[in-house]
Length: 207
Ligand code: AP5
Image (cartoon, rainbow, N blue to C red; front, side):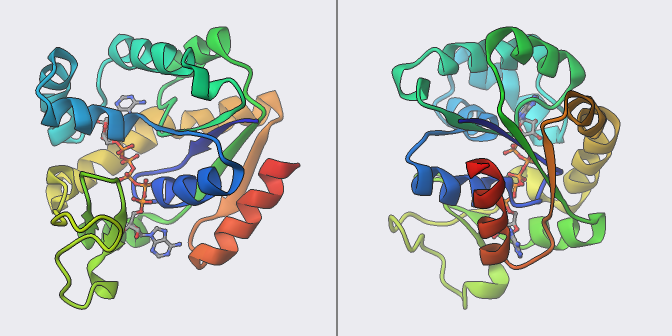
């Protein structure tokens, strides 16, 4: 089962992808996580991506398409995967069509006001990828899963969040139409509670 998670920044793609991947025992391929790891390790790709990611802009298509092409060729992807945050432009979607057959595209639909609140309060663990919100941390600063210190992503600052939302509406939202026309799009209300969303996604992914 090859699945795409589509949706604006803060829609819950990463949160739900982790849970669904655990449930189905398939890998989560988050292009954002791959780029943040490369930036932390200061690889050539990471150094190239840094200026774009920190400004809330998209990394150039050719960079990200190569990353995904290589990742999808790995052994652990042969029984399915969730693409979390890719594709994000029509050229990326067209490139993906030449690389893989996608079974379902899950679009998490959430209003901008909700997204701004979620992102400004988000805290993440760069070591294991776990995500939290300050409203539920009760002052805790360490990751409950691995004990690492939680941080606020640079691109979760107020100004950059607005840039990311603009970029989403201009460059990524057209993909809703793209996959609607292909007939494999499933829209899910991403403003519901996390367990309800999880069950809804599991139902559509299992078909
Ligand atoms: P990426 O890391 O993919 O960021 P994003 O798409 O902006 O998505 P986020 O990680 O911000 O949000 P999410 O939907 O995963 O939400 P989450 O589950 O964390 O990309 C970062 C950057 O990398 C991009 O800006 C770009 O520069 C670059 N990049 C990546 N892919 C690229 C590509 N394909 N092409 C070009 N450039 C690319 O949840 C958010 C918060 O809400 C959390 O605090 C969570 O706890 C909370 N939450 C989640 N669900 C709920 C719920 N149901 N109710 C209440 N709270 C919730």
